[in-house]
Length: 387
Image (cartoon, rainbow, N blue to C red; front, side, top):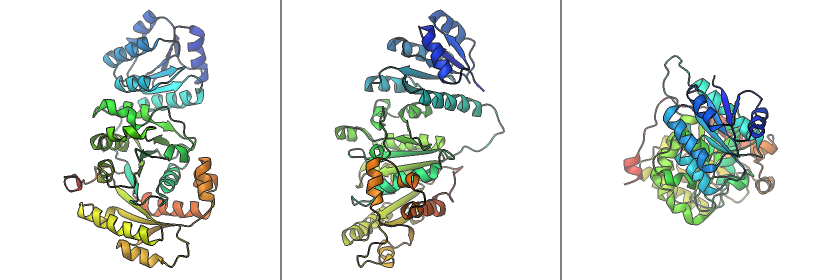
């Protein structure tokens, strides 16, 4: 198990950080002492840089740590978090940037960092763990795709019992942050300057934590930057997340664009969401045909009927016949769903016994949890998905 080291030019500030995170660790305030102590640190330790350390000096220290002790994780505490700061944090491989007014997040991040180091200690050889990537897709807007993705992620996380991350790849108009009442300091767009140089430390800096015990990488706040997120970046990001989480739930745009195809290509399971109306069924038929033509194995596809109890003259059998596959999940209609979205509280957390919650939970248990985290890389079909 590693140890924590807290550094801030003002001793009371460093001491306060130590107390806020449990009171265990070494507190330093002189640069010379930090340099000397760095030589004594092990690769399992974590360095916390306080808010009064000059920003340039903080990044200089981080680069020094990367050179002398590459196994040490560095957490930066700031009084103000800006986009340029986060971009530089990603470049220098900071483990996390934490607001100084959020001691709970600092405590959680430090616990994760020290626990991560402990789990990396030598153990009996075992196969590389590969989590499952589940993409929720609908080529027609208004299907309830984001609602399903958010609630599915919450069910899978089970209040932190499993490691789950939801990724919002509706890059221009994503609503995952709103649906989960998240106020992210960073988005997927902050990974763009890194190109293909994303690793676990960089991914950690992108994450926003939800109180229900799951993580999120949210869409850009400005639609204009959506095109800057390349398919290659998405593929690499999902591969890194797969190694860090049991399940990665991906919400997508309602279109077959290159970014969506990149996510579909690496997915273990593709959940198609449809509503019982003629335009939606027409779009569903085209969607399934397109996926099969692109080389997507049909065994990866699952069909979920949203608003399944609507009496509109379209039976469940007709929906399944149109899609050429059975219904894997049924989610009934309810006025409580838009209410939960507006409040930013997934309905499975607000009311686990609600019929909508039960429908989503049943789908998760029967179609997703049965897969479990994988130990092998999934078979890809990139050559056919993308020319």
